[in-house]
Length: 135
Picture 1 (cartoon, rainbow, N blue to C red):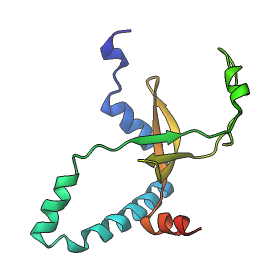
Picture 2 (cartoon, one colour):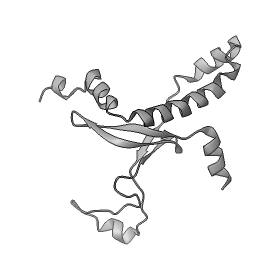
Picture 3 (cartoon, rainbow, N blue to C red):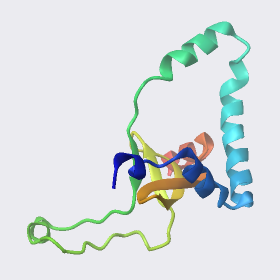
């Protein structure tokens, strides 16, 4: 296959996103709008916009976590090609999306032209993140 055939076009991603349930999209959009409304309270101040623009190009690590497990070093050393490692996550469970190690969303795996992606199904609001820290 050529590089051009391996490229995922915008139309392919748009079609994949079009399959998303309208109810889920509305719920996610409402949660996202609430988060951005909280950020935009000071939007009328010119200084705030400049300060916000300064952070937009800062790179962050985005991680999609399939699952976790703990194993002994003895078991780790016995792993070979074809070994299966059982994870705590169940098949079909939403996957966690973390930014710099902080859970920000959950989603489901999508495949478009043999490339993996994640469709966000639930955005974690700042208030929800704070309540989890207090536990």
